Length: 330
Length: 112
Ligand SMILES: CC(C)(COP(=O)(O)OP(=O)(O)OC[C@H]1O[C@@H](n2cnc3c(N)ncnc32)[C@H](O)[C@@H]1OP(=O)(O)O)[C@@H](O)C(=O)NCCC(=O)NCCS
Image (tube, rainbow over all chains, first blue to last red; front, side, top):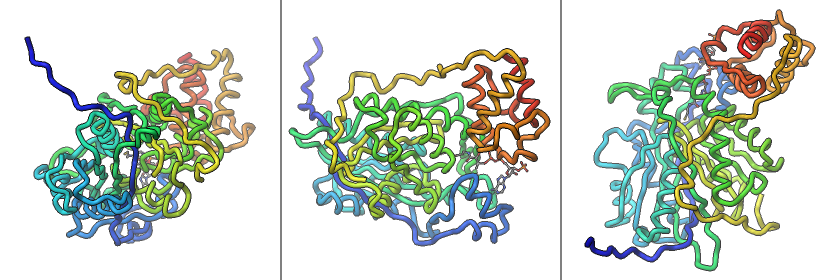
């Protein structure tokens, strides 16, 4: 007979305890890109993707540098010491090399010792996968406090002369600390709604270590405007909520037109007219797995969202992969 | 906004496996149109809604891009709504060849 394996006592729910972000100092405007000789205009970029400017990292500023800064700020925001963190998850798809991973280096530099440390690569869906994993780890008893970071240096993987990508992608990091909800408090992270569309695997690709990102823009656009709102609605349904409960919609900041298309479908499904819709792409560009926590942190700093607001997060991108969940903001 | 005025919404816990249901593509299909005139009217409504162009401007000989000034991403949104409304498929390679409003009407007419 097989031995009986004891399980840790489960915890009812997790919630977000703190938030932090980091953007490189260097700002690149649309005019700067055109001035570099790329055949494009400020007007075209604003109209088709909604970006006005983006932040790009210096050569010596790494994914891990940005992750460390965002992570440390999230810890301070949560009021926790590094020693209280038992897991560090970094969602990234732009590390310069596959090993060592970003999470171990980030943990070490923040002063988190001996913790679980692993990276998640689900491209622009990575942060929501990380948040879902953190929530499940806490609920299962495998960790008590988890630092989840989305950090990307897309500029390393973009051809600066390719106008279909260099206008879109940018650099940055955003982080949250996740911990158990108090026993008498409701969970603050809903179940994940996630999946993948393997038939579209070829639409966003870095072919090999010497290549740049190449994408089939229109195919990705069509997929995003049709398939992502249903994922967001499924995440709400799993959490026992409806579109009217959403205070703030935070889609991955891929393209402002995609964000507006998703928001339009959410309103058709009953979302309120006063629902706030994240538009951080305008100033930050598309930062892949960093875009959702970056947008949250920026919106909080601007006073557009507040503690207790119900936010609906949904990430989507290369894979193609997607993931989303409803969360209560700290 | 803050939730000070409202109670915290309740976030439920997960039923097993509920998070991994695949997305199905069963969108709402509109009623089957019969005449080209009806297709044109349905299409004009969609183009108006997506691109804000007056419905009476949307006539068969007009080209989407050059005359109606509709960009490629709005064309994708129009294609998606045409698919929902008329129950036809408008793949990207077909979409690229629908230059005029009349082309689109003819395509829907022969595909429904
Ligand atoms: C990338 C994207 C903005 C391109 O827009 P698009 O309308 O599909 O662009 P197209 O390649 O069809 O080009 C349309 C026209 O604009 C031109 N164009 C393309 N890129 C341009 C640029 N950067 N500047 C100026 N003109 C440009 C093209 O040459 C073409 O002109 P033409 O019709 O005269 O030949 C858009 O497809 C997109 O955002 N897709 C989603 C991608 C995405 O979000 N990826 C990340 C997911 S995580």
